[in-house]
Image (cartoon, rainbow, N blue to C red):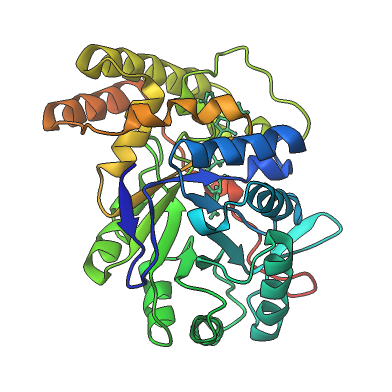
Length: 332
Ligand code: NAP
């Protein structure tokens, strides 16, 4: 498994990370705890050492399941745990809150749920526009000095916001949406990360399963599954994306004898100082992780990919629908 050092920290981790949002169940139509634990343990068996979670995923559930899987499997010294701060919830509604006093409580809650005494990568989940970013940054710097966290990250930040953050603390990583269909960070955030020595954790490496190759025109999503509101999965856009997946599948097979899923994850890894976050909740879903290792996309293939995307997806749309509201309840 390829590894990377996270930013300016001493944390070394696998370049493929297991994403555990779906394991929390919320916005993914539910989850099964036993299968989730098996998935986490299987991922580690297959060489994935980075596990990304967040308090908001299932309102504590994802972190609890990760904590249980790691403790029961006696895996703490083999893995790097990445979690987040700065999203609160009330009556099922989520809002941003990165005020320093809240972070002090939030990290204790995460450490408890994760059954650990340290977090390898602690990330601000979304910028809280009501709290000076420098104030949040200073608390994270203190937590790092205290040994409770080993690397500092932000997520969904712009370069201007990262500049403000970096004026008060060391910054090691940026977590942003990044996959073959969601390329927004290429304009500014990815070059910024390269210039300032940040590691980029690309989230949604499979574009919420689209790039797994499993999803068909008649695939049904149940309950609160976010793909029922994701604009890529609606109307005339859905067949466009599915056609792109078909052509990418053919390309991956013809050029490398690989699956479209392997092509999609490999592509993220070949774009810079990146980690690909691959979400899974069934153990079989990460079995093909080794298919991503030991090869690279060549320039001709990258050109063919661009042509497929331009031809099949004339009206692309980003992941903006996932952003939580910028104001806390009661604020105008
Ligand atoms: P993703 O990795 O693009 O897709 C995950 C989904 O793809 C799985 O839940 C599964 O859906 C399907 N899948 C995975 N492997 C498969 C396989 N081998 N065969 C068929 N289907 C497969 O999406 P994501 O979970 O949203 O993103 C990854 C991680 O990034 C998250 O878990 C989270 O850790 C992080 N993230 C962070 C943010 C942020 O704001 N910082 C936002 C989003 C995500 P089914 O189980 O339904 O089949």
